[in-house]
Length: 98
Image (tube, rainbow, N blue to C red; front, side, top):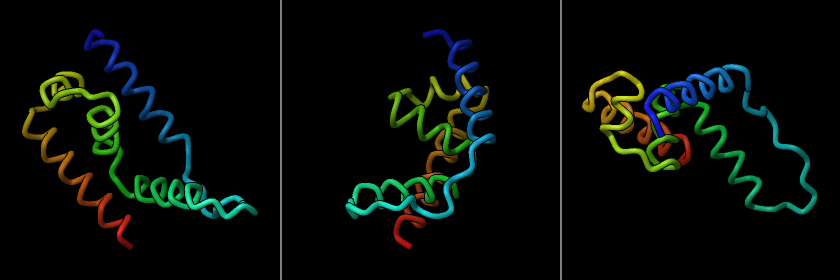
């Protein structure tokens, strides 16, 4: 996939994240499924991660892009990619432990 297409996709994702707001309260779930609670916990934890780090986390761990690919797509250095990913993981881990 071309760098240009990833750049467009990243911008669309950022716009969508700006548009969405995480749910404040979980929807009533009379089955008390733990997966739903875990999903809400993850959504809330991800909401605490800055947008750029969240985007890099998704592209790296979901799409499997390398640091070099991420740097090229986002127009930043590889060291910035690494620090943003590390920062995002620390925030995510901290929020999930709360």
